Length: 112
Image (cartoon, rainbow, N blue to C red):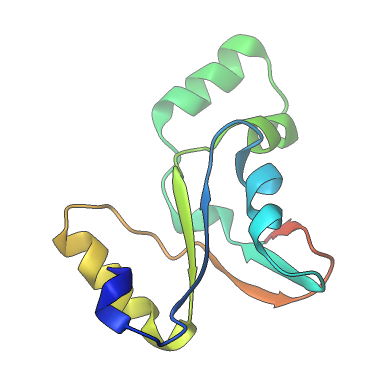
C-alpha cells in the first residue's frame, strides 16, 4: 500500500496495539504537542472483553489501559486520503474502523 502513493506523505504513523492498549501505544508514534482523540463508540468491542471485564471484576478504565479492545493496529493517515486507504485495506480483506483523529494537545490519547 505504501508504494502506491510514492512520495506523497499519506501515512503519518502506525502502531501495533499490543500490551498497554491504545493509550500506551498510540502516543509513541504521534509528535509532541499532538494528541489522538479516540471515539470508543466507533467500533464494536468484541464480547470476549466484556466477559473478561465481568469475570475479573476489572474496572472499565483498566480494560482500556491494558487491552486493545478489538483494535489490533492503528494507521494514522492524511485525512484527505483516509477513505481511499480504508477502501484499499477493506479490499485486501481487513476490517477498518475510523476511530478518531489527531489534534493539538497533550501528547496522549483522549477518549471521547
